[in-house]
Image 1 (cartoon, each protein chain N blue to C red):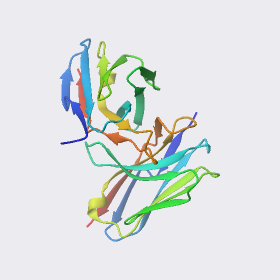
Image 2 (tube, rainbow over the protein chains, first blue to last red):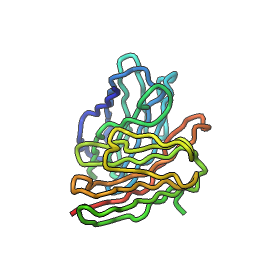
Image 3 (cartoon, each protein chain N blue to C red):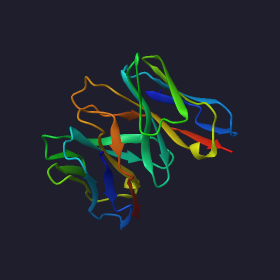
Image 4 (cartoon, helix red, strand yellow):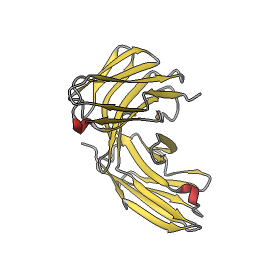
Length: 113
Length: 114
């Protein structure tokens, strides 16, 4: 059974810092890994999707890496801003193939101005 | 207009009542999902549907049922609501034809069962 763990559960940093969020998964036979952002009381928005054959994906100040063999992914946020404050969730497909997804519990990020 | 809409956005009901949460999408996606989110437990899959004739149970389907009325509509019912079904419910869609099949989420329905 696929399980996804995210560390830390919460993180508070001053504005401008670079930071790393961690995600680990128990079954390395994944098709892809996704990172989502969730603002309080809102739905999830997809940030990055890394295919199993890829090592990393970048979008603006965000960079996600994937190490399938060790069952780990990291989300790197450069030069953090107060607007980055949200909960970040990673997810992998439940079974072989693409969907449905198994989610981690998320990391709640606060960026202090 | 939002691509994935959920109604109602907030609902308060009493134990034992039957309620329905509705999800509609204009994205033209075949695949639709229902999740619930609880503090400390993350998102958990209730039911999913890969096309109009396909319905599958997720990890926590007990006490719930679904109906896929059309490609664009996927409803979740609580036959007899109980307090531990108090949660935030999300509908999502995806398109297997996309190179990178991500999921698109609705804004959520906050349900309180008294």
